[in-house]
Image 1 (cartoon, rainbow, N blue to C red):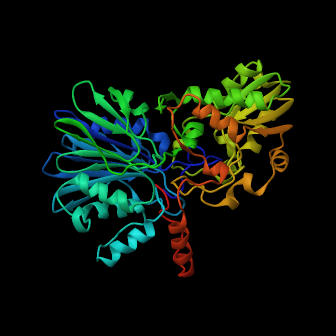
Image 2 (spheres, one colour; image 1 turned 135 degrees about the vertical axis):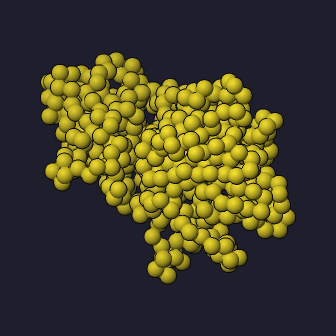
Image 3 (cartoon, rainbow, N blue to C red; image 1 turned 90 degrees about the horizontal axis):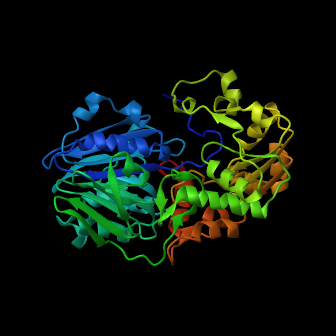
Length: 492
């Protein structure tokens, strides 16, 4: 399995994972976790795993591949118990291998400990060195294993049997973005970093028991009722008495990733009380007001840009139509195509609907242009389908800055918005015109219905990072000097 055609190997930022946790006596928690991870598959497609516990012993099954490829009936039947955590993972280039698959499961003096992690610790190298200096052996390149070992063997007053204390101790030392699902002998924990970079919510099962999940879309899939979102800095404990909340670390500001609204989250999820689909429509409406075009039809890049295209059409009065049809299964294979097929690029993923395009001036709405590898071929596809003109409109600003909070775009030189002007990008993709939504327009659409005081991270657009990166650069420069920096393990 040395080649994997991802959902958008073409030109999309990649999220790192989706996490899920459940406490539900007299329930097949492994099967519920399987379907929850299936609903969270869009957040990571390289590996998947589930760990369970019956209060005495724990088991784990994980492997490379999609959820449906990793788990068979025999695998689920061996995962017994009433507690479980699961994760579906995306990794950065170079770290896609089984040793980095999650959840991690180890034995401690207080029983089994399993950890699934979404995010990126910007001070992971320092934390890793502290563990190594204490004689703790590490087997993988991810900061998720660092999290696991810090919880297993904390120092000082945090080294007791109370897991909330251990988790809070970890939170005081960790910097960066993380949501965690933690499995112990008697409980499952859901943890969100103090700035709330990554989402996490709580659900209640109809037959009894509670779950935590990266997105609310997973709750409906497993028959759970949405209770609420986990607050930044909060620790949620799921056990025989229900769910309990403690504050692991009081937030000074909140910074939910704006890209969750723009692209990552499933459109049927809810963040900050807002429908993702509705926010994306607002982004399209704002884009139509800021960047009108003389055209006959509006087409969205399926599926993530469809809501924005609908919003653009509604605000502009230009009819919306389908112009591209997507092969939803070809991106789910480990079978390597021939070199000729690989050169076909987006033809593997999309086909034009000529009857809707012939002779038309088309507005092509996309949610983002990151590396610039897909927009040009998509414009060409529309022309092949008979489009007379193609005007590209993007429902987010140019991505010009790297992300250090767990998204796979950590090098400015890979970002076409950093290395080219808008006019140069227009020429590069071969469109009649190109326009992006402004940063102000994007933030207004995202925050117009958000709770008062809600904060967001838009550093990949603005370059204004909500956390200090001194530890990150210090570690990177030191490791590069030693010849050890590979970038591996930056995100999951």
